[in-house]
Length: 289
Image (cartoon, rainbow, N blue to C red; front, top):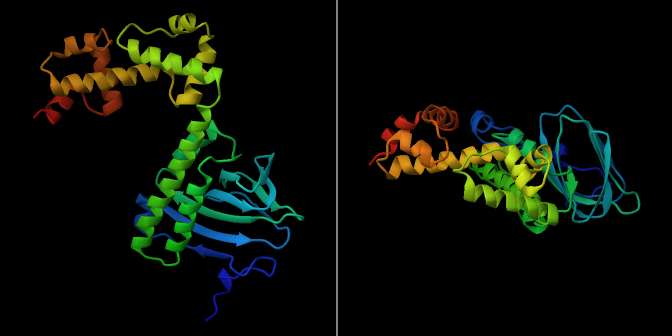
């Protein structure tokens, strides 16, 4: 029987293709999973409008140009562009009538898709020009090839490829941040200072005075660039040091707390359990040789 669902209108090139998948219960509960993945090249303009889809969408523009409307904002796209969006939000994408585009895409969900998208959306506009465009294309090509079949092996491979795609996107965004000049350099200096002084008494007021930056601006920009506030960054560094001393020394908890900058054993225990889910003493028992 001819598969009409995988056919495209005459306005699409003949080698256009898409694969629609129904994930297994295992994939829904444990994996990133493909809902639809495909490739097309248009011969004329086309517009796709959607909203309220429980799906995340990554699209690469391979050639041509067009427009993305997402959450009321418009973004001009061209060859080399990428967009990554949450499809619960109203959106449409439309190809240029004079320069129809060629796209490769994946609709996906599952695993920690929401968390990945949340981090991305805080750090980037939905549409951008990724440095790792070719690497992303290779992953999407592989994803499309894998999904010509529907079995557990394909679901496992698809989950890994989607994770690769998301990791590339986040790394690309992070690298772009590092190219933002003086402001980025100042924040790197702040982070280095915290790396060298995290065992000392911490105060956001003192930190802002040291670097001549408003504490509100410092806290906001530090989180925007590094995904964590200065205070939580210091606590994380201290917890890591506590874990090392618990595993590789016989120091009592009181001394460990002092060495790591907590100055209060009960507060150290509170922060440790909040981070690790167990007490410092239980952590030591579990990891002792």
